[in-house]
Image (cartoon, one colour):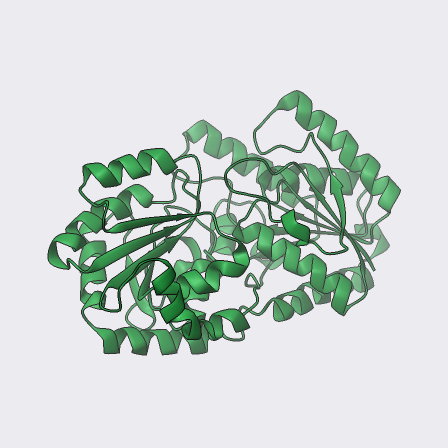
Length: 395
């Protein structure tokens, strides 16, 4: 079949890795003709398509496809997507992210694409927006949901959120966990000594890691406040921040003001292939984002046998099982976060126990091969079962 994926940008991020694995698997394992359409990926987050990571995948760059709301550019982009769809004549259009998801679904519906699928990696509406912005995004999602055949959520929590907002009925959703290359994480333990040596971490130090863009709502500020409390009680603790972004300078200043300079390692942006090595250096991974569909770093750490402590947001509880694979903390409760991190830092056998349980939970669930097989099954079902009367109208 011919599949067109559309995503706003291909920065180094979870939704983007998910999409790239899906595209490459469809092309290599099923011999499908796959085209990936994306906007430009500029900025400190890096580009996932650099250094030949897309292989021989056909890439269509659409300069007008931008993350920000730009009315004139968005109208132009809509027209360009329609022309691309007419030229490619895809059997399936699969959209990702808010902007590409909205414009891509509308363009596909207008061009009467036989199967239109959208993945909800994270809802574009959230409690930290103004009420007007939130209601606008909900209405946009509701409108776009009526112009596709299937919605895929990366976590059950995303389906609950969308259904509660009356975006679409529950029967239109299916959960397929975001896939990744599991083997490098399963064997990451072999890299521990080497990884810690490279980072200047001694064997007796406890490393608490966070992997995320240095961006608003990712919770780095909360973690720095927590780090100050933990460091007072456990002098041998180190915090490893993996990722880069627009908040880098302000976070480094905050760390210095809190007297944490020797306890914090700002690792910066790393190649996705290096993430297993970074996790191997950790004893605990913490996730303090205030909103996220299901952060890939949680199953990645658990696959490596590293326990997690996470804010209880969105899909986190589907892998961070409180008291079994780690601890869940109410978002913003830095005191409890500090206590849980300290308790786990002092309990090596409990860390091992949580890590083993997490590894067992995530081993099959997060394989990108499993993800692609399930997604392609949806494509096939839509193309096989689609009644002519259910195809998009020309109006």
